[in-house]
Image (cartoon, rainbow, N blue to C red; front, side, top):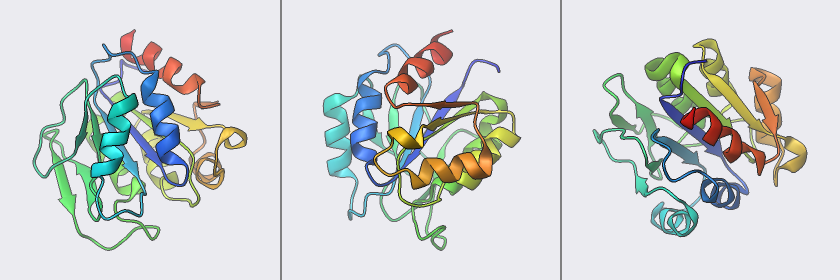
Length: 189
């Protein structure tokens, strides 16, 4: 695999805690952008961004329409919109119908990012209670990107990582504490 150009992260139930732990251990000099899609059930992601920022080593920003995807930051999908990464490496928001009962959908984010970054993308699937993201992670792998899945035995809700393993397979299946260590190695190599 070539050096990653971007990392997309998907999660749902138990996701905020997993994201806090993961981003607390990401090296502050990692130059790649992280783009997060988490099903929050909240009307906004403001609180989630504030909570993540208390733990993260990188700035946490709510992704905005037409905003550039810049390295060294964590972008969070806003509530109520699908978040896409366009070929010009800018964000696009969509109110298209829900996918797997979710908007934002992890599948939508991962598929658009896979089209843009191809083999330069890393997809990370964490804890969650449904199958959203499994199709998107398969797209990441189909385009030559790398897939990392939280070990379902380690996840607060194992359904999402298990669905990813079943439908997409993985390059690495790890307990949560080992995922940021791997990401640091991949991103800083």
